[in-house]
Image (cartoon, rainbow, N blue to C red):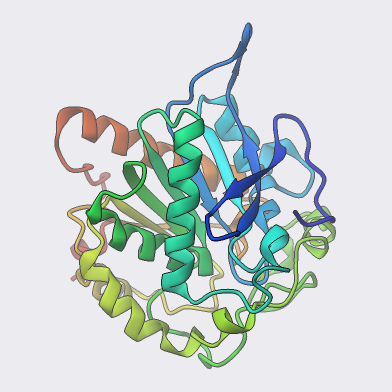
Length: 313
């Protein structure tokens, strides 16, 4: 686990066994009842972006901005691993892993986690930026039934067509930048101090695939069948997110449920900003919709007015 992140409240550090000698460091927050531990409704698996760590989802030292704290208080377990090549696996995988191999490693880690701990209704992927690529890869692989049941996925900060030079590094540095942060007014000063303890270079094998993402997305998207929600910050600058581009993106995805949302008052690093709590509550609302739809055996309904990108066509 990154030394710069201090756990608080319900959040603690654990290690995940991912097989083949790979151990992934992770943050874990579990629901607690008045008389002790309680079974989770499901497990939210939070996947951080490039050049970041799991602490991205634990806010800048303030529980209101922490997805882990908020979701655990509402009855969910949140498991936020440091992706392969980050944190505890950095020595074992100094160059990281390409996307397909990361997906396989995470699926093994989740399967072994589920063998030892309750997962309720299954797993729900909450992902940011490069973590969203991993979420899509895992969702595309989920049809084989290997691992815990996948309820759905909620992804922020990921498009399918670049708005910048696609060779620019997708590395989240600790200091304000136009692409990673957007307007500084969207953040408390504590957010930058928090990020300084989480940021580092993107592993080489991960970075080598950046230029191929549009083609990779086009190959993965038709195989994604789980309910999917995509959120774009008001000041997102890495990805094109005009109406026509988002309609095209959604039309390529195989799921019956593809929702779009925009988060006002936010830059790319939504979960570190002032809008974090609002975004996390919307994420949890989508998870509630997914669980309710599973219970009645139908697709997740679109909100009114509809925010599905297919409506934009």
